[in-house]
Image 1 (cartoon, rainbow, N blue to C red):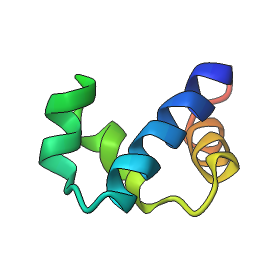
Image 2: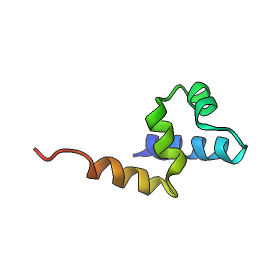
Image 3: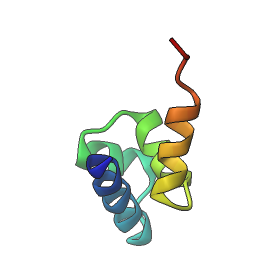
Image 4: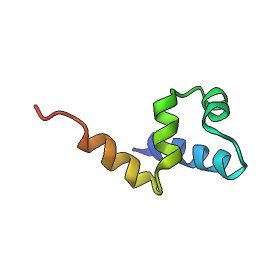
Length: 58
């Protein structure tokens, strides 16, 4: 979860600097959907809740 929060912070910092999803993808080396989730989320916890909720149960 630490890595998720770090990535979220980086994406949000670049977003605040006026960068779009594609430039952030290139700069951080992340997939489009990953950047999109971090870009649209209001908090890092929103990203974690979404990824955990989307996992199939064993």
